[in-house]
Image (tube, rainbow, N blue to C red; front, side, top):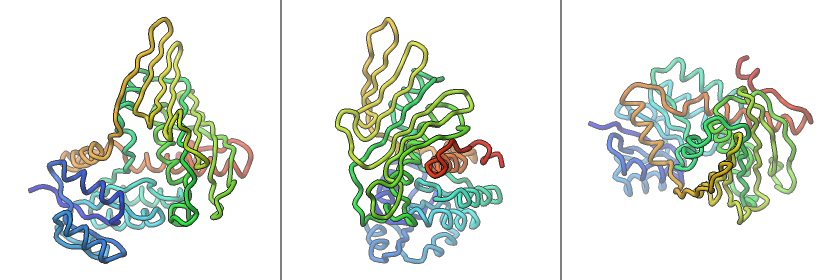
Length: 326
């Protein structure tokens, strides 16, 4: 019999993960939880679940459930992760892992004392052309990751400084994870500029930062919601090595590879990731091996953003590696 999963948070990402599992063998979403009971029951009926409930603890403690998917508002991630791990459940948690370093570390402690695994859902690592970029330039000197959105509405929960943290934190953890992944190294420190320019909730809404990595590579991160540029698109990445470069535009679905003395090559891909990360999660559980994207990756992605915020306040580079070591 296959693995049985429970979903907490019956919103857009909960829907995506449930439908991804329907394309795979090995795990089925059977329980659905949400603060709105009607929504949980609607998901259970639509996706062939066994029940929907507002009692998330009931799902966490259900002995028939092997894994918990956490797709709730960001400020609840850490608590739900810890409760699920302490109940012996495997966890797939949507990004960000948590909104503070202390919460990320608390999740890490729960992983250590549990026999279960936790995977952070950074689906962009599975984009076809992100993988191609790493293949073409495995050891870049410089990496640029840009994610510029159109202005987020004032009233959405993700713009709340407590519930979501705003665009730069909410989506910036994706950018920072990709930056670290493509650089192939952990960041030492960050120096940032930007701030709150117009969002009424006071969150940081536009930022540019430079990361220095342990392998001597340098990363440039640009994040905000002032406008999504049509030429590069919302998602844009470049990587450079001696005599060569890759450029990913068109939401990272078009890659142009340039090498001195040769004609540029153009590769086309698609926005993949959800099915692939779920397949990897199932495989890790079944083989009892660490997941490819774990709580350490989630910690780094959050810490990179938060230390960039610290740099905005201090006006100087702020450490990352020394905090992780401490």
